[in-house]
Image (tube, rainbow, N blue to C red; front, side):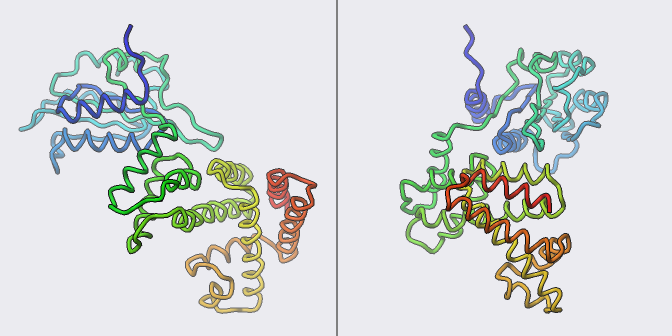
Length: 346
C-alpha cells in the first residue's frame, strides 16, 4: 500500500529533493500554511532560476491568467539554461474544470518546470480550499506525485520550531517561552515569525529570553487587533468587527483583557472628541490621550463617526459589561459579545 500523503510528508519529501538537487517538471504547493508555502516556493525558484534571468522565467498571478500563454511559455525552449520555469499563483484553476491545461501536461517538454502555488483562500467566515481534490487537474498532479500539501503544523512541531529559532540567538531561553508565544499570537507561522523577530530584537541587549519579554511584546498584537475591531464598529461594519473578534479569540485572549482594551479605546475616543471640540493642537493630542502619535488622525476619523452622546453611551456600556462580569450576572465572554453588539447598534 502506498504511504499516505500528508502535510509532513509533503514538506519532508520536497525538502529532501531540493537538498539533493532533484527537480520535477510539475509542482503544486497548496494547503493552509502560507508561510511554509512561500518558503518552499522561494527555495524552489532560487535553485531553478538564476538571479536576473528573465529570459527563462515567467510568473503569473490571479484568476485572469491565460492558459494558452502559460502553455506557450512552458513550451518555449530555454535560452542558455537547462530549464524554462513558469510560476502561477492563486489562479483558481484547481477549483474548476480546466481540461485544456490538464490535457497538455503530458506533452510539456522535459526542459519545462511548471509551478502552481494555490494556498487556501482567506474569507471573512473562514477559509476556502485552494484545490478541489476531485478535479482532473489535481488528480493529474497527484498521479505525478507533484502535489505537495502544507497544512498548519501541530503545536508540538511549532514549539520545537520556535525553540530552534530562539536557540540561534545563543542565549538561555526560559522553558515556557515557546508555549507562551503560541498562547499570545496563535498558530499562524507568519505571525509567529514576525513576533519572533520582535522578541529577538527586544531582548538583543538582555542576557536571556524570558516569558516576561513575550508578555511585553505580545500586548501590542492584541491592541492592534482591538483597534481594528473598534474601527470596524465605528464604521458599522458588523461582518468585519465579528471576524476580528473571532480572530482575537483564536489568539486565546481572555475576554476580560479584550474588554479592558475595548473600554480603553472608547475612553481615548471620548477624550479625542473633547480635544477636537476644545481645539487642542494635534501635536498635543497623543500626549494628553496616552496613545502613539501616528494614531492621531486615525482616532480623529473614528471619533467623527460618533456624537458625544454616543461616546458617553459606549463608555457606559463598557462599565456595565465589567459590572455584569464582576457581579456574576454574565460570563466574561457573554458580556463581551453583548457589549460588541451594543456598540454596533449605537
